[in-house]
Length: 214
Image 1 (cartoon, rainbow, N blue to C red):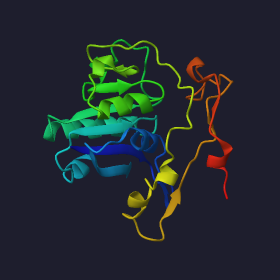
Image 2 (image 1 turned 90 degrees about the vertical axis):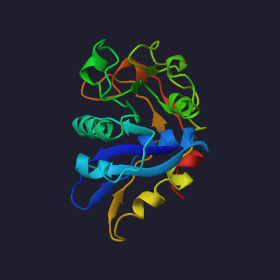
Image 3 (image 1 turned 135 degrees about the vertical axis):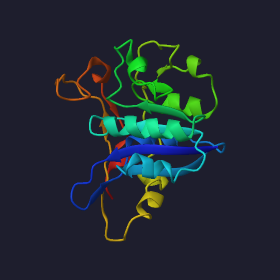
Image 4 (image 1 turned 45 degrees about the vertical axis):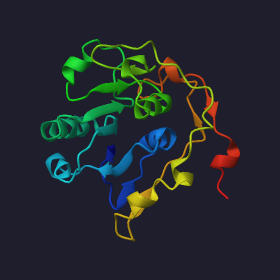
């Protein structure tokens, strides 16, 4: 089955931004039933990108304020050409408090709340979406999302080689920006920050041997 991953960003000068969030989801949840056809990291015209897609069964999008409108339009265009394709999204832009969120965004089949690795793994395993914690569907609102206690068993997209095929699509002199985490969460509640809510209040740490530069 074919899957496409989307974490699109605007280009700033010569920089291309390598996708950490969607990389975590795939590296943790992948199995042999799925073929990763492409990872979209920049805002290609939606109609043009959809024209290149090959029978997608699932598209997973990471949604932030800077790509939310783009993701919505891309999802609309995918649904027009591939009606059977399921489209899921998660990230800070997903409103877990709005009961009408699905009515406002019918181009999506499911929303993942909070940390998505376990939910994404269950989706790729073929589990019933209405039984998966943190997954919201049209007919199912899950219990409030629960933080994972151990993040060290999430493979690193850097160490897994997830970025190499992405970088290979661009000229050799392309400048890539890569992000890595040493921890998740924050004890503060800054209103301008997407991790300022109570859900992220406790810190969970990666082992330093994993994140230190050698």
